[in-house]
Image (cartoon, rainbow, N blue to C red):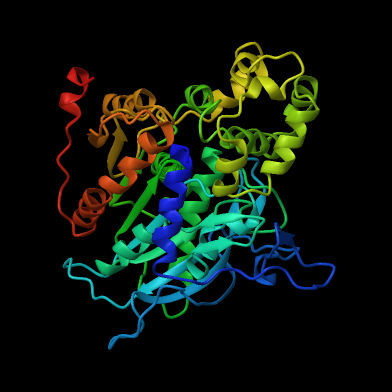
Length: 441
């Protein structure tokens, strides 16, 4: 079995050992019901035609049954969950509905301040609506013969809940909601979704968090890029949401470099998600795509638009973008020769604004999927702006597989990352190590 298959199998086994639940295959439904790869998306995820004006305003909510839950004296462990839909604004300034979940923990908070709130930005889930992180809390494992979805973010969420912090998780723009395609790695869409999730949690009836609660952000990989961008945009987009601390693990800060790295890798499918997201955000790029993509490339993008990460690993692992283009160029070659694409990717660059609050940037030194060098450069850029940065290079051996080199630090550094964030939420000062950055490899 290839390394990527072993990794996915291990993830599936981990979830399966604690939950045997899976989403049922779609039954006969009404004409307005969305079915994605055999999974019926609940009607909750269908946005209304009219949205409220305020960013973060609640559109609707309902109880969310957690698949991994145990009875406890203070209530179900790890807590009571609520499914959310709230209003945000996309990168084009247009109103958009976003879904997610809020979990009120059963554990008490011992940090000496009111119960804090952590917004979790999920790592790469995929682009099909069935891949949404809020659905992963209810159904951690989906294996129906058409899709493979693993709610691997549940681990970090439950660890934060065990510390007594309330958690809100966003599904991002277009993931879960049935009205549009997920704008994968769009820094503005993602950051707005994260910050507005915090506003929505504060507005939820029965939630213990208020405007006085300290707020932290937690994310790895796609989530690390989302929290990094949110820390940059918070002062202008959400000044009412001050940040005590942000964890940005393996952030894809420079998409030009990341695009090169994932092409031909185990996670080559993410290249298709990126292209789909770019076209969703900027339809003016459509003619460029039409001019360069061949029939196989267009079919791959359509196929990937409904896939979760497990599906993409098995079907598109190691795919080369040169097979998707009419002239045999790679996507990176096309970007390099097309000013419009260069400008779009340049607009997605993270690191040009000073982030709010303390930030911990962690990246595996052998991560060549979301390359270590560009993630470290983000920390350098922020340090040069006078930001409060804790940079952590995660030293794991190079196992020769890009996917494992990337996801290894997610697990090995997660406990330290959570401890660091809990300290910030407890009003303990961070120890910036910006002064060491120039000397580090």
